[in-house]
Length: 91
Image 1 (cartoon, rainbow, N blue to C red):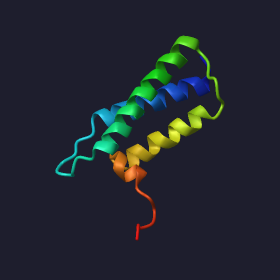
Image 2: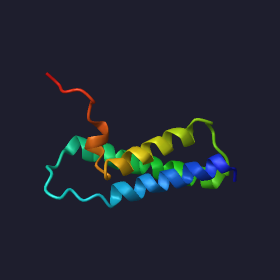
Image 3: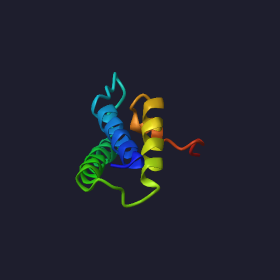
């Protein structure tokens, strides 16, 4: 297994674990965000298993995207709604 493939698997596992261990702590439930979180966990699980089974990556940019998402989720405390919030207010 190459280093980029290993980094992609580690980033996918960080994303999965951080979303699964997120606690709302009084924030409201949003069904759309919950669906996106479920899809993100399912896709990252599939990617990690596929990379581990094949031993290589199909795309060179995949580790960069996964690491970016993992860092964003860690900075947002696992709250996917904060990660998907637009940087400007809607008016």
